Amino acid sequence: MGFIFSKSMNENLKRQQEFMLMNSRLQLERQLLMQSQMRERQMAMQIAWTREFLKYFGAFFGLAAVGLTAGAIKNKKPGLFLPIVPLSFVLAYQYDMGYGTLLQRMKGEAENILDTENTLLEMPKGALTFESLEKARRAQSKFFIEK
Image (tube, rainbow, N blue to C red; front, top):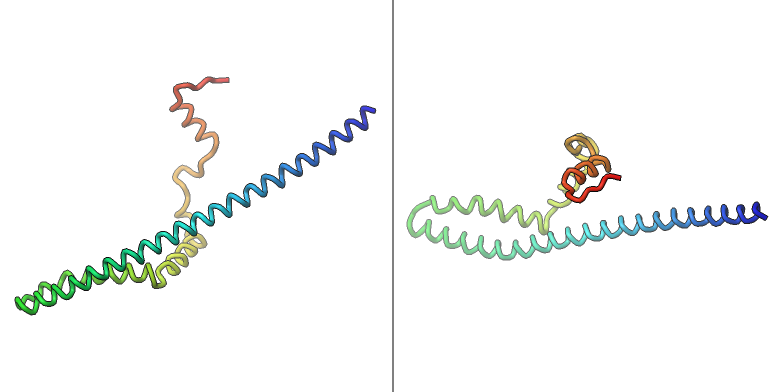
């Protein structure tokens, strides 16, 4: 009788372990999906912000270019054209970020770094470990009770 009861408990334990493994895998998949969607939403917000900024900066650049050109012609001072140069670089960058291929080029460069220069990505003193975090927590904790 004890053998039958033990066999039944072992089967239940095995099914419970399988269920826990499946549940943890499902939870991990959900977390990865959530993180991916959050990253996509943050990137979409950044692109939208860049496009909105470009509208205002484009209007500012247009007015500044017209005003500086009129001032340079009227006062016969070609030096008034100089501010247009750096402003045009900012305008070109913002346009490339919002509507151009800057994000694709940045993604390609990031993939290249991950593939060929991954030593640049290593953390100082190596990866974080539970032991190092626990040591730091104990050093800071005022309520630490040693077991």
